Image (cartoon, rainbow, N blue to C red; front, side, top):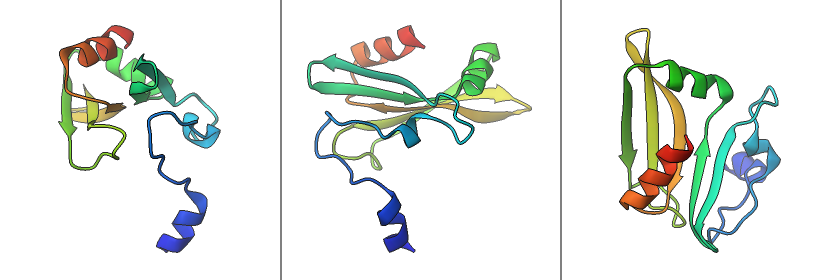
Amino acid sequence: MSKARRKNTPVIPSGVVFDIPEFYEQTLSCQRFLFMDLFMKCGQDRILVFSSDQQLQLLFDSEIIFMNSTFDITSANFKQVYLIHAHKFDQGLPVAFCLLPNKRGKTYFELFERL
C-alpha cells in the first residue's frame, strides 16, 4: 500500500523553495484550498495555510476558536503544524491547517493579520 501511495505522492522537498502541485492547491470540487503561500524572507521562512472558503466562513462566523500546534510531525522545511478550529455544533471543527517556519511572534502576527 505504501508503494502505491508513493507513486502518487510527490517527493518531500529538501528546502522551502518548491512549487506546490495544483492537485494540493484545490479541493476535490476544484475550489481553492491553498489560502496563503508567503515568504517572510526571500527564500526562507515560508508560511503555508490550507483552508477552503467554507472553512474560512466557519472561522469568521465563530465566536469561539481553538488553536493548537505540534512540532513532531513537520517536515524539515517547517517547525510546526498549527491548527485552527471553529466552534460549531458543540465541537471544534478544523478550519485552517498552517505550516509555520518558527515560533516567533512576528510569524503569528503575519498569519493572523492575513487571515
